Image (cartoon, rainbow, N blue to C red; front, side, top):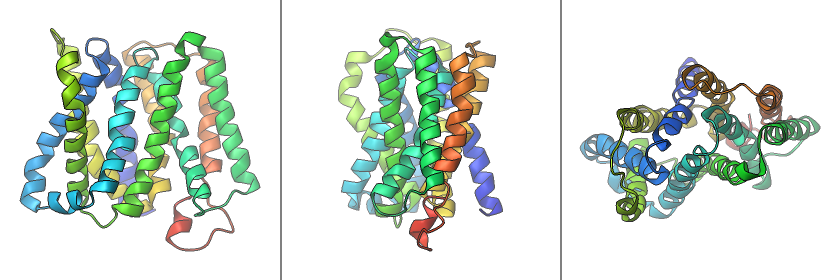
Amino acid sequence: MSKRGWILFLALSVIWGVPYLLIRIAVADIDPLMVAFGRTSIGALLLLPIALREKVLAPAFRQWKPLLLFTLVEITGPWLLLGHAETRLTSSTAGLLIAVVPMIGAVILTLLGHDRFGARRLFGLGLGFAGVAALVGLDFQMSNLPAVGAAALTAIGYAIGPIIIDRKLGGVPPMGVVTASLIVAALLYAPFAPFYWPAQVTAAAAWSVLALAIFCTAIAFLLFFALIAEAGPARATVITYINPAVALLLGVLVLHEPLTIGMAIGFPLVILGSILGTSKSPKATPGKDAAFAG
């Protein structure tokens, strides 16, 4: 990966390790749907003037079918599900569960025929999912399993999103795709917002939603598209190797969340499994598709 790619990688690794902390703070006072609505609507308003000036919205909306699918699997569904998950789970735990994104992406790309499983990759996938099992088995009660399921569905959506970008939206200006997706997501949330509008909002929750919109949405998505163009969809999701560490560190230091035995055992297994499970198959066909699994 180029120097520019590494800069994008490191920036996103930090930026997208922060949302788990901010979401946890926000959902303590605001319904998860309103957190997602605030994040998407503010993010869309911030990017809209730039998108209009650059005339990139029309090309994005012309590809409305893949745009809608991307919005549903990368934004609308995951942000709502993750918010609900963090009403029950700590921010650090949610971040660790999302670390399976590269492994899920590798499985999807293999099932689509763009790569193949070798012994090393199968071992890595097994190791990574064993780490998730350790995390869930050692740390959770049965009452938290729906929240774990919500986090798992979020991870699946995050794995599918980059593939849609690369396969169906690669020729569309990134600014147009980001802005249009946020507009569509906000519109999908909007009919439900009046029913969940908070009677009052604490300063901590308000600043958290604002930070989510500015840094973790508008700026982060532009960096994410640039990283996908630089490194491919599979390598782009590898930011989740570092995201969980950032989420864990912030959760422990800022929110004083416990560092559990399940985290201590599961985290290294998930990260090592992700590295092995997404490594390029030695027999992969050279070219763009082979680069997806690297």
